[in-house]
Length: 425
Image 1 (cartoon, one colour):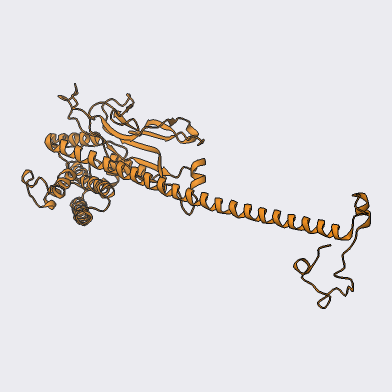
Image 2 (image 1 turned 135 degrees about the horizontal axis):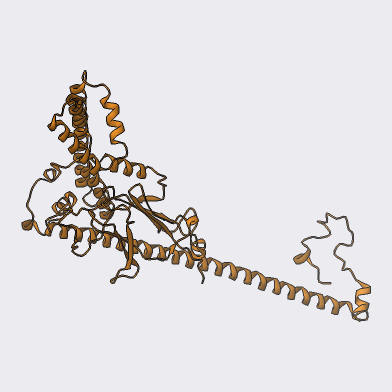
């Protein structure tokens, strides 16, 4: 029936089954009868079976070949997908670099405008100093540390924040320079803090033996007061001392006045800022302090109040977007690039003249790039308007999604995340 050594791999001499008729063909009589082949000769049946076996062998070879081709095609598709992922990652990295370069150029432009308007910040002069290779003649070549002279602790802390922004945007360029300036600024802060502590101790020593209740009174008096209220209080005490009315304990009021003078008049605002800074700052949040320049502002109240910018502490929230596309092309070991998912703006208005008027915000798409928008904050005297450039996407206004817009404890808070959309091919 065609079963030979090529098929059986056994012989009568090598027979593990103990079958004396191992190589004799088996004849399935009933099957042959059913198929009408009972009268067919033995030789024809063997030829027929051999033909079927060869046909089966060819089919198996075809199946094997198709499987190999499918495996090869799958490998080619995986390689193509991997190559495409690499191209997309490179493109996203290029976009991020272009965005960082744009922010750096905007920061330099704002610095240039402030310098031209005569309202330069220390970071403007320091950045111009290090970036003036092509305009040496236009820069007054002072040593960089001279720009830190006369700054108060808050000014130095703001400078450290601005330096951090420049270090991030410049991607390591001028790193040694900024590190040196950071060390100098931190040393100045330490010296000022030490000097303030010394003055405080001197003031305490001067009033020892006069009124031991002054310290407790100072704590009660300054608690919850704004900078303007502390200045007004100091003025009233000076008037009381100058008047020297009968029955007034001049020693007590002089002790109280000396204590108030060593207290920083911005204490209330700084405490509010530090409380806000320490609240729930996650690992996916970083500080966001790059302002956008605004047109020249004219205020009707500028002749009565000196305009000044409000302080702020803002955060930007970034993370991975695990949409269908990223789930297909990335995994936890090879995650997609992080994108901006939301912002938290905290603008401080401790000395707002009309506290019944809530600060407002206005969102305007950038005319030169619709992917970004200008977020502007407006409060009223004595504060100037302030603006920041943000990603232009649709906001999520649900409270459960983290949206917050409120003015409480002299802090205007605007927190929001962007809406998420499912990716479709």
